[in-house]
Length: 357
Image (cartoon, rainbow, N blue to C red; front, side, top):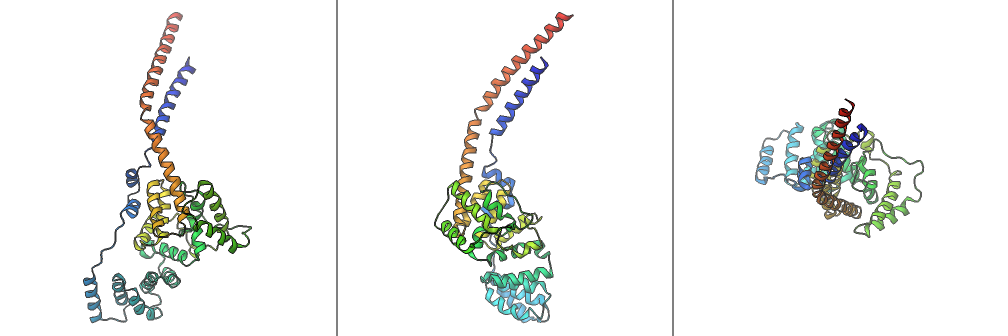
């Protein structure tokens, strides 16, 4: 009788847990906003820094009338004002002659690197940002490392950028887990047997991906598996010899900061999507990937295929949630039945006890 009672109790708990599992509403956008507010804001409503041209021009004039050419801070203020005005070329003219004079000043290299970046001179920008991090490894509150990672991605050829993401620790997850899971690599992948004839394979895979707007589940698995084989023979970005940005405490701040500063760069939106994916925020992942596609990401077909799979997953989850609405009634019925059985069992126990006495 005791065994029967325990079986009935466990059965009732099992029904309760089944109902909880079917009520699957964590995929809704409102919940994701609450779960990841900073990420949601960066993806859904990014803020553009307000620029006040008259004030900046007045600042430049004031600086020039009180020149202090032996002070690197004066030069940084002057160049910074020009960068904020959208005059990156002017900032380059100001700063280039100063890199030797103020060789150990963080600001000179950081501002020059930023100006180069805005002009699309990624190799020059990477050199200066790498230099400023040698001077101050914790620059920009520890976020400058993410700027370097982005630049070390942008200086690579298009085929590399097709199969990697700019925070390279996430690359394998991007290719293998199809928008559902993020596993951060501890160290760059290295193959004992790198693929041969890389150029031909690159051309084949790149051509196939660019010719498609999306991929079926099977196509996505096959193509991404081949791309994943290719990443083993790619030289890892230099930053990975110093840091693991995938587990850095500034990961979210660094990714969102880069997206704010580079709102037109598809790679930044792809990385926002992967960060949302890591937090199981599927709707935010979709929104970020869609933005990357709109901006012309070379990974468009992979991103669209992952979007399609995530939407399919969400549709099924909503279907289960709708079906679960009927479940509470079933639980009540089962509970009543169990209560009746328990009552009958207790009566039998009491009767047995009375008969013994």
